[in-house]
View 1 (cartoon, rainbow, N blue to C red):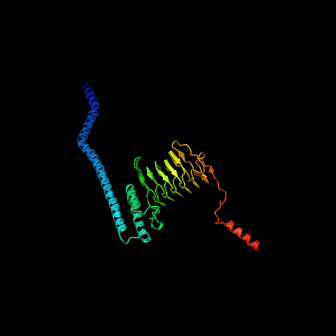
View 2 (cartoon, one colour; view 1 turned 90 degrees about the horizontal axis):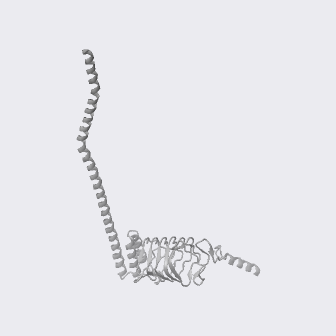
View 3 (cartoon, rainbow, N blue to C red; view 1 turned 60 degrees about the horizontal axis):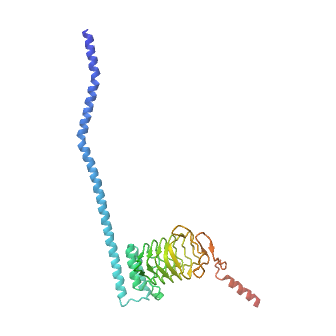
Length: 318
């Protein structure tokens, strides 16, 4: 009997031992977690604080960089205006001297690459008012800005006060994403300029030359057009918004209007206009059709037929 009781006690002790062991193990883990918790919380806080500090530092650096860039642009612009002003006021300066104009051209092309759109506008106005960018002066006194970076150039007036830019002379320039709104651009010259995405709206444009411009995705609207030349221009996907008063002699010879549309997305047709309003020779319209095809001289041969005629006459003579 004693042996049996002892066996029972041993069995009972053996059965309770794992529970006590597991409980002690869990207690140790809890103590370790509680002991490590402050360190974990502190570590998380440190990480969050570091991230916030880095974010703030980055914002401060970006702000400092913007301020530095603005100061640099302002300094570049002011130095340019001062230098060119002194040159123009110099008694030795000669507008018809190509070397003097070349000096201004080099300085202008350089500064235009390093200033913002707002100051590009001021530079163009400065040169325009100094009578260097005008089509009504002698050709040898005009400043050439060929290949100048005028992208983003904006001239925006108002319905009560328009910006007078008569005779503005800007051929062969890069003028993408530009805006001319509430402007007067009579007798201006933009020949061969790159003017993609440029807007010409709410303006009066008379006797202005847009020959050979590359202006895909341009926007034109609420304009008064008269005697303007677009000969050889690329106006694909041009959006004609609002209205355009086509007066007389708008020359669209050899112009590409493929995909041009109105403000509702409808393709533009000019069948309703007369040849007195729009000159349409070899013009490709929005739908891909052509009008006024001139079948003569389709091959540019330098007048070969004249040579053939001369040979025929020569043979008859001899």
